[in-house]
Length: 137
Image 1: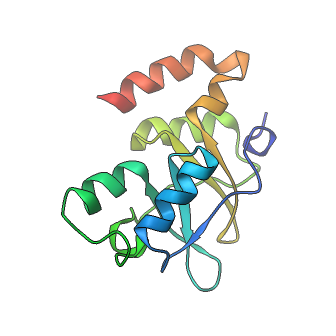
Image 2: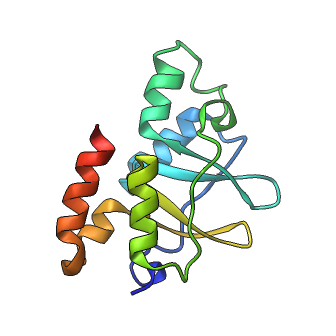
């Protein structure tokens, strides 16, 4: 099974100049904990998580209306192409200790897969439990 079979699409993305407050509102409205960030060409340049907002913005006392996601996002984002096997995505998530991974083709975000999405696939439930243990260490 390939990752595009289970990805959430279309992906919700934010531009790098979106304010942290706007990013938080997008997460709340869509009940999601992370959003890929794209540059002016629409290519992925990072990902911002609810944790980034708390740790790198609020806890630092930054103004969430003026601070841009570019300033707090994680760069060097791991991603997989849509034709990647689920196991490949799973291995990257475990290795990089992330719970969500963007599905990217030619620099463009097509969708996102979470550990929960993989866990819903009956064949991967045990592996997901093991990965969650690794991610949480």
